[in-house]
Length: 249
Image (cartoon, rainbow, N blue to C red; front, side, top):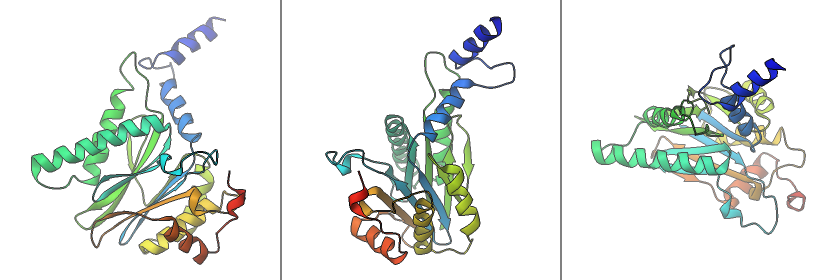
């Protein structure tokens, strides 16, 4: 009985380590990320690809209100998985950091610099009483000095750099697919195809443009571009991944 009460104390306090060195609230925040629909990031030779599963729960919902891909700056895009409200707060923070850097130094913020600023902000919420960790993971991709960079933020406040990754639901299965099919010499269009195939590998009904979000950041113009439904449909058809729209809820 005493052991159970001690467990509950460690469970409730974000600032208290358990005897085995764990912060349970941070682990619960990671579980919240797993409950979100999947997001994928792929670094290619000439850019970064961001792809998200944005299935709509009801046909009455406005599709444009479901935002999982965001433009942080002209050369940086962000995809999220987890609590949407938490993601919105971090996206706004990232945008402010990008604007401050441009005004202060008269140059675009680096992808790594922005990622570490965001993760420093996240980390503060793991050691302050009366607050909870952010229940969201972000994929931050962009171009710095002509080089594509791809990072993940974790609810613990730790940044990781990746060649390709997934966050959210089915992360393990999607990353298994990416590990088997990723190549260092991929171009952006090939990265888009790989991201769509990875999403399709965990989907039973195929993919539709309405249920997918896609964005690229290319080295050529270092520009963030969000693909339209028509462009997504073209890619789905090219890879024979187009599902039946009537199956989408």
